[in-house]
Length: 183
Length: 248
Image (cartoon, rainbow over all chains, first blue to last red; front, side, top):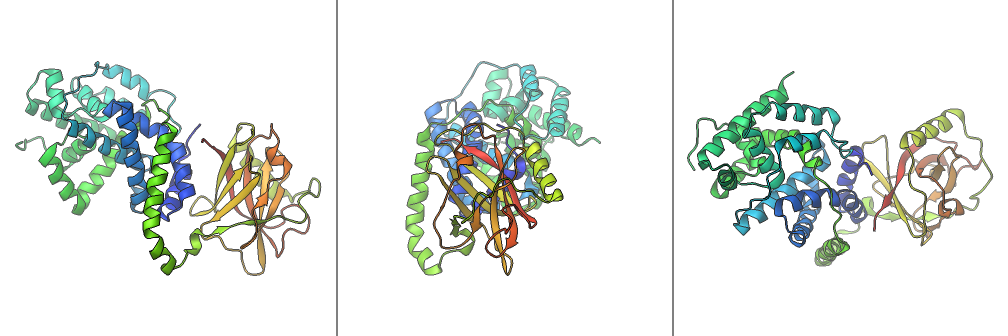
């Protein structure tokens, strides 16, 4: 089912007023998406569900701080979910080396039918700009964002010093940003 | 970790959003973020720009236990605040307004004023197809005024046969009543009753219980005191919203 952006913002305003019914509705419409994101980062399904629970309690508590000008309600929720998942991942202090997914596969996915939430223009622009990044800068950014890779994990994966990883990330981000903002 | 020449507020915010700032560095960034509007804007920008990547990750439905756990934590929190809430008084904005069953629910197919009918049919046509109703499904419509502030949340429980409306600051204009309508695809609006305080929940008419009813729109119109005299909407649409299935 497509998620409509306007409706999520409307629900968020109701949630901020303490409306539990609106909260349940918000949960029903977004929890599968957030769980997918969290699970990809923490890997373990039961742990991902625990994180998801924390994420929604935070959303409930912080709904009043959501501002529509800060982006869509979903991107606000995604950032809460990703930060929480990454915090939990780091606490485990494990070096995770999942099978490497080719950066090109990601680009294909970003070009897919979409989730009904993402603005198509934003999506196409991001895809276009990611394509223009050099490897391994692009994969570093994708692995960090989607899979929660730390600099140390990226350093292990690419057999490069951590400072090199840091430089790759910074350059990648700078190129990405100037492309995203190009008229 | 020493700072490198390639580091700027833009890249630090980018790394924060990516999640690659670690430990003390991340703590320091969070502390700066709390008070620095430049960093706040940078973080928002990265979150927005990178969000399509998250949208490409396959969704996974959580087990029902997750919501149950959230609900019990909320209930525990609410119980702790109960004493405070009693003294502070109930927020009128969150008051549950129930529907009084209209004396005359069915007056046959009403002829609706041209502009209103066109607007509603267009709304329904744009809404597309929704799954047929089945026994025990629950639907929720967020009924809002022109897409800005939330006004009504309408919950339709087809098994319990009950419609409940939660008002978020909806008020009937002086000397008028708000009337709730269900509009099936391509159908004339059917009255579900007048929105009133302090009366029982409304029983769902057969049209909403029937299998094969394709999705609908819930609308609220402003009517003369006591409800529409004609059986169809006569006043302006104050709110409208689509019915959305709630997964349980």
